[in-house]
Image (cartoon, rainbow, N blue to C red):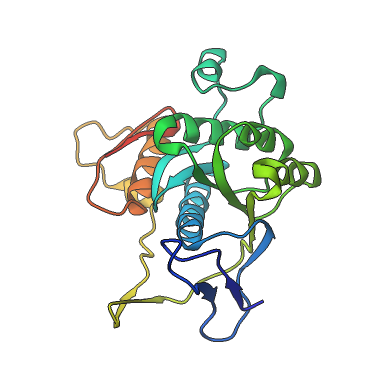
Length: 246
């Protein structure tokens, strides 16, 4: 499949609308359920880039909650205390949370109001624990590199069977040049390939040269989250999650 007809464009009156590969190659995604719209895919692709980079930088499963083309929250899969589970409205009936489920609970919990009706991006295959967590949230859709069979059935039951579920090829590598058209004019730029990793944190300009591993994780989360925020912003990160993006 090298093109997909969207539900509609940025607004319901903007039809027809589609995503497609200009070079005729296959799309790097498979739509497993629902019919995503234009903004859904913008959230999905930006969110997936964010969590993929977080996983590469930290080695931990990552999740983000995107809304209107900006991250409402992002996090990695560090364990949750009983207190944090209550703060993030984690249903006790779900049972033991996987690291990926912890990542999404943190990402959603960072700003529950802004996350209402979010598009979810996961760095890893969606497992049952994560699907059960998502099952009770108001959300437009999800993108991940894969889904466990039971997890997929749980997600398909959302929104009366219309929940948007996208599977992305984790090996996909986009072209180095990006183009978009606004008012009939084509914009072109190199992709933002700036790498945020341990090497970036090597030049410590303070007298104290020691940065704890937890502090490094929080720095990665803040810097990578800001990379996918639409304007000049400030991100507060603590305990493995972005807790404020302004």
